[in-house]
Image (cartoon, rainbow, N blue to C red; front, side, top):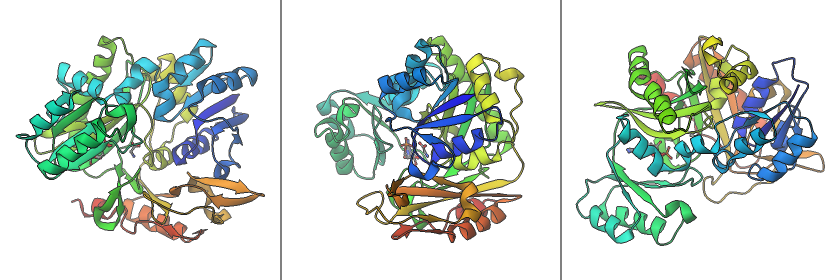
Length: 420
Ligand code: AMP
Ligand code: GLY
């Protein structure tokens, strides 16, 4: 069986490594992948957004099943394009991927179907947004409508900052067309939980919960990043909260998408905040999270391809989806300076003893030598019976990875360990 995975980061590496456990798979192609995953997949130099080239490659290489992992190709309709030529895919079609592609869509969906989320207003007119901010409660949260490389959210502590944020999006277009409309929403407080789920549009199966660490520096200081580390399970996410989320958020979301004729199949990611008034949706993603996947999939006991295919075929209710007990931790190693200016192109050494659980996000090969290429270079994951052991193992493994200018947070999981 020949599989194709669209995407090229740590998340895709984790998906590929998990898929490889299925012995019916003869070859996995990564489009484009990166040099750090060359031992696990055949790299194909086609960008994740080049839908026509992806389609052509799938056709000429007799691909049996495709996994479309990143948000951009999903929102652009990669799954629709592959389905047109008879290739089954893991991932939502374009109509359903809008749940991540447009914040205005997702906020209006939640309002219409009574799914708990922050109060909000939508603006397409700059002056109206500025006027609203004269009296809006502060702090406030400004979100660009469309995809913005995970950077489209600004939390403004003052009225002036809020107005500047709106201007930067609507007037200066720092996120391009994504800022044509903005959502201004209520600032919520509480622990954050990421819940990735498998769904075939009828059944929703939450995966083990996780916790991201978005800020660049220890103590949750510094700029927001794509994620500097993760742990699973998330200790804030108790059984009682999970039950409440299932009833008030997960099932209503699946039903809402069906009612809108936008049946969602694939991985639906619920970014939740456990507020004093109960769990609320901060964001939906139409895909696996990065670096959440790097802790969630190593804990998956069931065969990933079988579960993925069940979401495609609508047979998820008959499919066993089992997670291991225990915990996982992932420490992201980045290039110093990330998420702003950083240097790359340094030799990247990953000791054989740890490469099984190292997921490479940014690497290239120069004359056969592996070099860093990107802000987030890789994630080092470990699993164990409990979180303290998983964290200790992950940080030990970090010592077996070397590259110049490496930096990583030293406090991944610290907050989770303090939860009683
Ligand atoms: P996002 O890019 O949507 O994941 O948002 C980035 C981060 O901004 C989230 O992980 C939250 O920490 C924060 N955030 C987003 N919306 C809100 C909100 N309404 N209240 C407080 N924090 C928020
Ligand atoms: N780690 C957050 C995301 O994947 O969007």
